[in-house]
Amino acid sequence: WLIMFTGYHAWHYSFFHELFTNPMLAKSHWPYRPVFDGLLDYFLYYGSPLLEFIFKYMGLAIITIVSFVTFKIPKKNNTEKGGKKEFIGYFALCGIFIICITGANWGAAARLSYPALPFILLFILLKLDSNRFFSGNNLARATSVIGIIINLVIVVQSSLIPPPDVITLAGVEKRASAIDVVQEFIGRPEITFAGVDMGGLLLYHGSGKKVIDLGLLCDKELAKNGYKNYSRYIFEENKPEIIEAHGFWVNKLKETDQFTNLYTPIMTITNRNEQILYYRKDIADQINTMRKLPYATAKDGFKDIDQPTLSSLGSFQVLDLRYPTNP
Image (cartoon, rainbow, N blue to C red; front, side, top):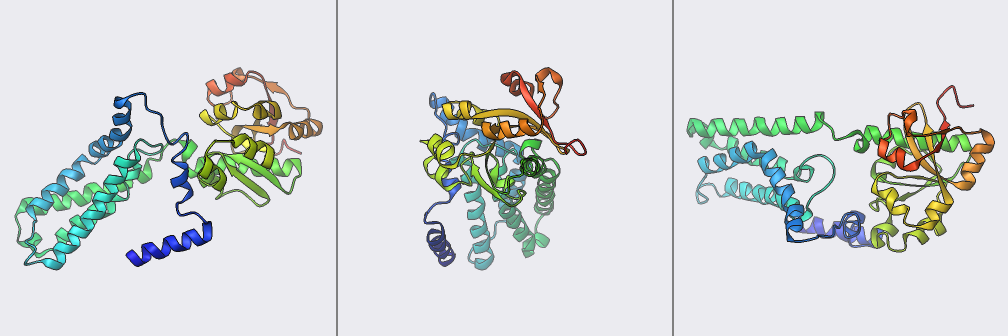
């Protein structure tokens, strides 16, 4: 494993000219690196994921511990199998350690604990593989079987109950498809698009797009430097025609005069969804020349956008590109 580890990172550095990955670099910047108001905030940030993991997987943890105790095999008689269990146990502990050093995160509950779960399952399966499973007591057999069932239930549950739509691939694909529709409508074979959730958006965007990841993770420049001097990089060097941002990402962009002066929000409706896109004003003027856009407010009942976001915009224009409405 040391040869694989060293070889991979040597290749990574030669290809990307960075020792660390974009997410590693990005997580040292806002909004991933929090500012703590006190010691309590610090412990809540780093301790809450571990508590979340313990309570969500408490049944599995108890079963694993009982299985370990009831099936403990002397090393001198079972060196090979004992070594396997220890090795797998180290991986499981590393997966749990990641939770502690990462702190609170977005997305599905305890999602950063997922790397530990397969090794916990393997640990129990190795117990089942032992001859002591058949010669051991009923408690040992029962706890091992129940542990496997609980683990499988956790995996199935995590698959069938996805997080909110905004961060699922299906939700991301809907937003990505709108960019393709707009690009076709304005007739530009090449555009620069800035947005968040690029890890998912890049899976669905069609050709002819240069992308800037406002979430930092898929953008080398922003991952390395964060939002330090970001206005120069985004608004002066790249000048994206369209920006998609929501929540605190929009608030961050509004801190710059370039964003407020050069971009205008337009409610963009396609057959797939409704979303607020920020168009560079020359693009917005081009669209208004092609089609006179009506104005709307939050009271007009747009279902895909939360009311606080719409209310903060006041009055905004609406671009309806639903088929067969669009020319």
